[in-house]
Image (cartoon, rainbow, N blue to C red; front, side, top):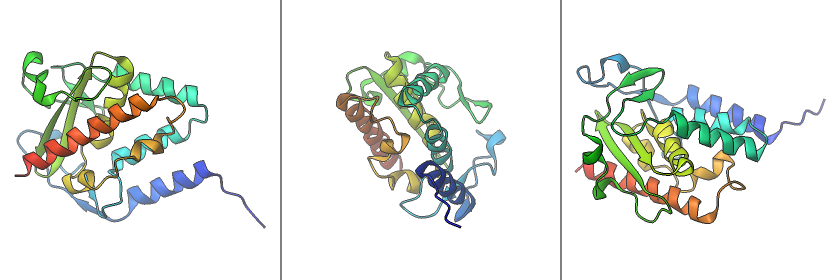
Amino acid sequence: MHVEISAVHSRLLYSRCLNSTRRTSVQLSRTRFPAFRNQFYCTAGQEDYPPNLSKLIQSFSIVPDPMLRYKQLLFLAKKLPSFPEVFLYSNQNIYIDELSEQEQRVDDNKVHGCTSQVWIVVRVEDGVVYLSADSDSQLTKGLAALLVEGLSGGCVETILGLPMDFIQDFGLNQSLTPSRTSGFLNMFQLVKIKIAELQQ
C-alpha cells in the first residue's frame, strides 16, 4: 500500500529523531544554575540544531497558515521579558544577567543594520549558551525571541555551526520583508561573534 507523507510530517519525524539521537550530556554550573543541572544536551554534528531550536521550529511547522505563524511570532515577543527582568526558560526563572537596563542597552550589545533598535546579551556557562534580548519593536522582538528561546541551552559548538539561513525553517518567508530577514541575520551574526569572543 502506498502511503504519502507530507512535508510537515517529514519535518516532525526528523525533529523527533534529531532530539532522541546523537546527544552528549553537558555538565552545567552547580552554583549559578543549580535548577538546570543535567537538563541540557549538546547535539553532535555541525549540521544539527540545538534541541530547543528543533522544538521551536516544529511548533511553527505544524501551523499551516502564514498569518497564524506571524501571530505566533508576535506571541513570542510578548513572552520575552524586557531588560533587566528575569527571562523565562523551560518554565523556570533564572537571572541571565545582573546588569541594569542602561548597562545592557549599550552599543556593544546593539545589533546594527536593523530597521528597529535591538540589543542582545550573550552568556556562556560551561560551554552552554544563554541569551537575553530586547527591542523597541514587537516584530523585531519576536525575531530576537526565536534566538533566545531556540539557542539558549545549546552548546557553543552546535550554535557556531548553525547555517545563517536557518530562519527559513520557520516558514516565515511570506510574513517578513527582506529588511526584517536581513535584520535577523545581523542578530544571529552578533550572537556568533560574541560567543567566539567569549571563547578567547
